[in-house]
Image 1 (spheres, helix red, strand yellow):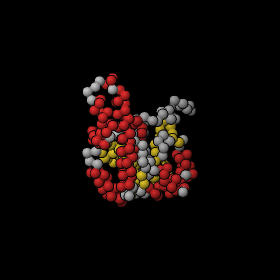
Image 2 (cartoon, one colour; image 1 turned 45 degrees about the vertical axis):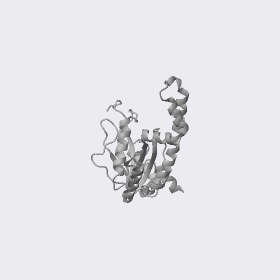
Image 3 (spheres, helix red, strand yellow; image 1 turned 120 degrees about the vertical axis):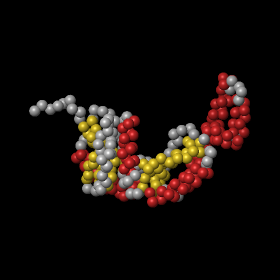
Image 4 (cartoon, one colour; image 1 turned 90 degrees about the vertical axis):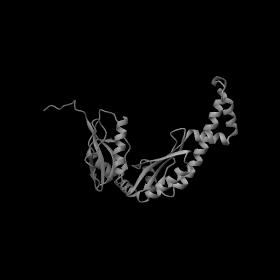
Length: 258
């Protein structure tokens, strides 16, 4: 019987690992168009969340990353989940079982540590008019540059505009560092762990992924509310989550090795 060599080769994408008593809902979907059904591969007390993917289509589209995050974040809301790097594809179920067996002594303790814990990302962004007024109020050189520039043509004030921009950027960086220290000091008392992440916008004030124990979610929310109230009119605060612990997998592994 002839073999259909035109059929796409298929592998298994590995999204994350959960305890073996966790099962995905029937509505769980993975990458692809249409989205692939998510199934499981179990070895001992570990279960991998997987879906079939054609090997002739590279992963990496925005929709693929969204599907990956949606599955893991939805799982994290109800069970401990150890994310696997996006785009990890193995040959078949047997290869995944072998991986779970080989890595069992590392994965199982990490899942135990993640029981009842999820990630949130605390973001704060400066309100531009408020922070500019704050800088001009405290920096006389910046204020003088601003006054000099006003009413003069742009081509005649290039150097002054550059100097003002540098002073404002430096001032925002100093404010960001001070405000981040304040947030770390307060939030650090009510979370399991936190990471000081790099800003992703010029007006970012705070960018902190945090690992929160669900039993202490109320305390975490209360501290965020206090920060937001104290910075009202100056910094817009928000938290994103719950999410899978993307920012803490390596930190937990290193802590275990120590």
